[in-house]
Structure formats: C-alpha cells, structure tokens
Image 1: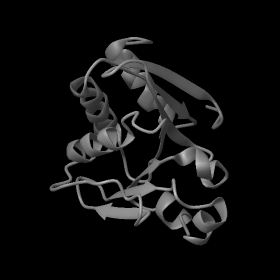
Image 2: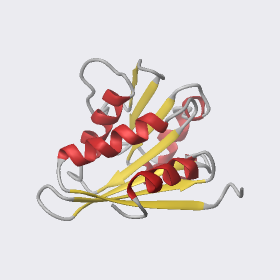
Image 3: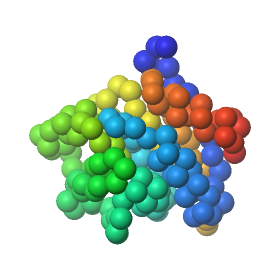
Image 4: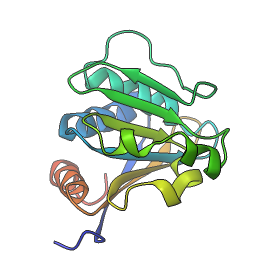
Length: 163
C-alpha cells in the first residue's frame, strides 16, 4: 500500500467518556514506534485525550501537559513520549532531536503537531479535535500511510465510517 494514502475516521464525542472510548481504542492499537499528532483549538481537549490515552497505555500516575518542559516520558505497556510544541519554533524543535523519539521504541504523542509539520514523520496518525458544543467534539482521525491506515480501518470497523 502507498505510504502517502490517507484513511480518515470521523468521531463525534458528546462527553469526556466518549473521548476516553476513542483514546482507549487508539491506545489498544498502538505499537512501538508509532507517532501521533494531536491538533485543535485551545480547550478542544488535546490534553484530556492525552491523559486518557496514557491511562489506557498503562501509564500510572498523573499525566500533565508538557507545555513548559516540551517532552515528558512515561512508562506503560510501551514507553510514552508526550510532547507539547506549542511554545517553541520549528527551528527549536529541530534542535531538540525529535527524530530520536519519532524513530524510537516508544509511542510519541505530539500536541500542536501542525507547528512542526515539516519535522513529523511522513507516516503518522493525526488527530484533529474541533469544539462543536460545550461538551461536544468532532474528532477527525487520519492515518497517513501504514500502520496508521490500519488503525483507522479498525476504528471504522468498530464504529462505522462516522460515529
């Protein structure tokens, strides 16, 4: 399959519990070396998704957004490298050596990934969260290449093309 093929799944979340269901499904499908970009407006739920994702990846304890530390590392079923690149430039991100994380044995979860789009691996999972109501979100999950397309196909099989 072509590495640039995109597979898209649309998920409507009406509550934090709905968002957690999606985070759990993505965590269950995660394997070593996966990179997940997470974008959306301020307050759209990126950190809430990240916290639930980490929980379902087996991370114990509190998971906070690494806004000022840029990268936090956690141990779970797989190592989790939780990044928040909101406050850094593309050049600063490049100087951090993110490739070592992106191509390592853990899972990278990058909040505000669109800021460093040029540095993201060509194949990755991209999750965009859009606020559509006080507790409602439209979440678009795009698998770019494999194995990320397979993750989206599994979500589609579980919930249909759009949930």
